[in-house]
Amino acid sequence: LRTLPLHPSQVILIDNEQEFKISLEICYNYEFLKQILSYSCDVIALEPDWFVKKVKEMHESALKKYL
Image (cartoon, rainbow, N blue to C red; front, top):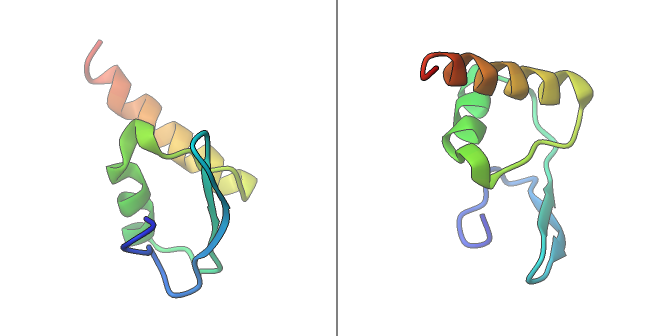
């Protein structure tokens, strides 16, 4: 994400050895959700709450397929 930003609005908020945090201003679409999910356990969505919930639901749904 440092070298290939997700979106032109991407702003790096924190960049150190423990954490890399960005901010984006986008209009939600399914393609963006899929892109975030493609990072699997390497990315954590922090806000907005409804997006965090959607990402969590998608991960839980995928996990159920392996149980």
